[in-house]
Length: 218
Ligand code: PGA
Image (cartoon, rainbow, N blue to C red; front, top):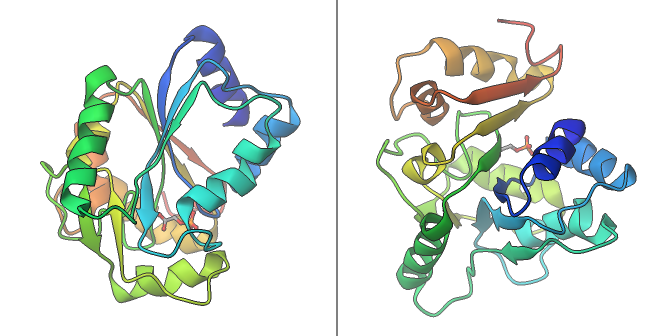
């Protein structure tokens, strides 16, 4: 995936890319930076953000800095993130959505939640959803502390399913045996909000990067 990302930005100067955080993309980000990959011509949009205080180690802006941006020799051409500290969260989501849509996304890179969420589009998220404030399920809330924060997030902000499906190309990253069942369901359950990742089957340019453990039940 690190090599594919390098080729993608080489072939498309000025690419507009949505990037995820979390445990899944970390090794690929480290490899990308270690191989001296550059995003200097790219515009990066962060996929989502937890409702946690600035500087919290579980914040997505902190994770992308730690795992990718701080390791690059040159910063990205531009970098955009959702401000969970904004006074008017609805207005902040509308601003972000408009900014994403203004130039579109050439690529959306995504991880897969154990419950089928994409970004923080939890089960129940509609096909037509856009960037918005969301409540987290208990399992996602608990998972938010795995990234270093003592405090669990109970809400967040995320690009919506429609925002993500508007990308020209989508890469879904899935690793580990704990993701095998949900990867299988992503590809075989009825398409709908119960398992939001099933909506990816409505898109015609999705590539899944899975390791052997995650692919074991396909
Ligand atoms: P993970 O998170 O990469 O840390 O497993 C993925 C997700 O919950 O969306």
